[in-house]
Image 1 (cartoon, rainbow, N blue to C red):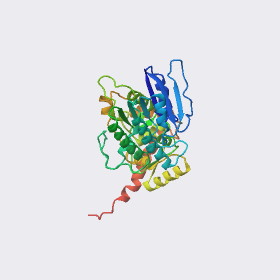
Image 2: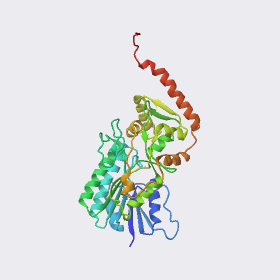
Image 3: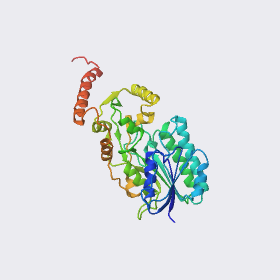
Image 4: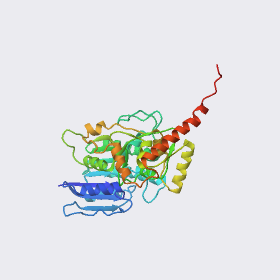
Length: 362
């Protein structure tokens, strides 16, 4: 008998691609997808060898998911429905309920299902927060100096807490929590990818944060490995940071995209972010603003040495693949570099001497 895998969040691009990936595996007998809305694109059967696929339209905040798990005899659950943005409703309270209450209902259903043997939960490196006094690199054991105060990152902190409680109550279930850095790639549809699609990138004056990215191909590979039995010499249960090696500065990202940056004082950019959210131009959340101010870098030693996976794409390579799929920027990268360097020199001449008090001549 092969696996019966339930995947939440299949109406999104990542969930739909992962469900299709599972169907091609010979050890999978059935893939069950659930989400609050039908997928935008049906998960089509490519050939006769693909595993069957069943979709159930349901809200995870309701107890109906327990019936689906029992009906299909699910043994592996991959929870991808923890997201920064909602489906159907963009109201922040509704998104939070979907993330937290939905996870609680799913874990309750898994706890009552004796056949469930493996649980994989998609989380985010946002649980570490972004603050000026953060360590240079976060490991899985690092406690953040300032826990996220709201938004998707706070949802993920609460979700991880409920998952740890489930792991204590069901020690027979292999539980894996994957903390992904910002996901990029040709098909990425995340709030950060929407920010990078803007013709001009608003930034916080005086800050050039370090960023990390995970390529969507590596994300799918890590999820697939986490949903399977561990390979010899590896352990795929526990908590793992997932990101490509290396870092990029925000200014380097802008130059690779050919996007000019618009440095603003923090109050001004906070006002712009609020206006963008209200007009739905882009989901520029407060937590994303903190990331684009202070940045965040995580250690991936456990992913490579314990989990046994080395990402195919480094952070610069992942962003390059993302940038290649974007529309051309306003300026070629080489001209943009010259313009930004010139502006920096001009600002230095204008504000540097004025910032220093006049000293009496000796």
